[in-house]
Image 1 (cartoon, rainbow, N blue to C red):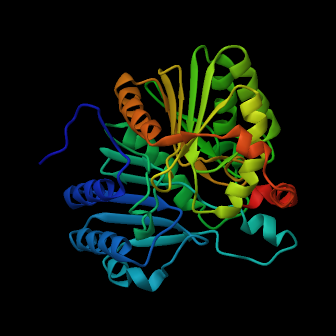
Image 2 (tube, rainbow, N blue to C red):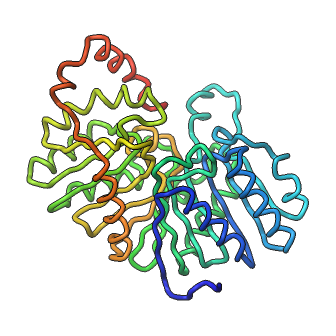
Image 3 (tube, rainbow, N blue to C red):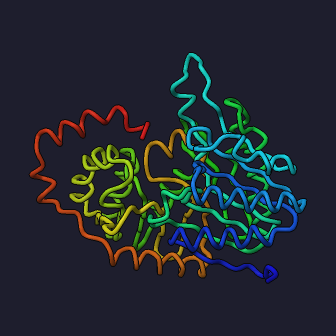
Length: 358
C-alpha cells in the first residue's frame, strides 16, 4: 500500500501496535530509514527491528542508526550483517574519562525518532525494547514532508554523535514547518527551547494545562509557574504513574506533591501499569509531544526532541488518549501524604542533591 501524499496523523499508546506499524513502514521503505533511540534491546523487539533493517539494507535502502551508549543493550556486532550491506550504526557519546567525567558522561541522547523516505516520521516516548511492551507510551506517526525537517535535525545528530563540544546555538535552533515547531534541546545551563516553551505556554494558558509524564521533578520556577496558573483559575492536571520504573524518582517526586496540591494543582496517578508517555496540552489547542520528561534531567542534561503545534487532528488524538488515561487514574491522597513517616521525609530530603541524575 503506497504512502499518502497528504498530511496524515496517527497516535499510538500501545507499544505492540506501535512497533508493528513501525515495522510495516520499514518494510515499505525505498530510499532511507533513519532511527535515533535512547535504548535498544537485545531482545525480541530489538531483533525484529534489526532483521527488518538488514533486509532493507540488502535491498539497497540506506540505513542509519544512532543509539545512546548508556541505553544500548547491543553492540556493533549485533548489527554486523546489516553493516555488511551498507547500514551505519553510531553509538552516541561513549564513556570517556576526564576532569568533569561524571557530568559529561551524564549528557545523553534521549531522542526517539524514526524517519523514512522524506514521508514518514515517528516522534515517540518509546525506546526499541521489549521491556516496554506492557507500558503506556506516546508515539505520533506523521505522513508528510515534515519528515524532511526532522531529517535535517537527525543528520546533524548523526554528524556530531560522539563529540562533547559543538555549536550548541546551531544544534538547539528551533526548526519550523508550516505551523509546527521542532524543539531541539542540548545539554546546557541556560534555558533550553522545550523548557522555555513549557513556561511560555503555562503563563499564557487560559483554561487548562494537562501534563502527562513518567517522572515529575520540575524545578522551582516550573513549580511556581504551574501553581500561579492554577491560582488564577486555570485547571492544571499532572498525570504520572503511581509506580514508575525508577523507584527512587517516585520517592523524590513525593516531596513536591503536597506543595502542588496546596497550590490547587490536580495530581492524578495512573494505576494499571507504567505510564511512560510525554504529553503537554494547553487549552485543548496547543501541544508538545516528544521525548522530554518533566524533570531536571531532561531540562539540563539530555539531548531531546519535541514537536510543538496546534494541528486540530493531533489535538483530537491526544484528547482521546488523555481521556482514556484519566479513566484509569486515582487522585493524590493529601491526607496520606501529610501523615507519611519521618523516615520517608528523610529519604526525600536526602535525594534532593541528586535530582539531576535520575
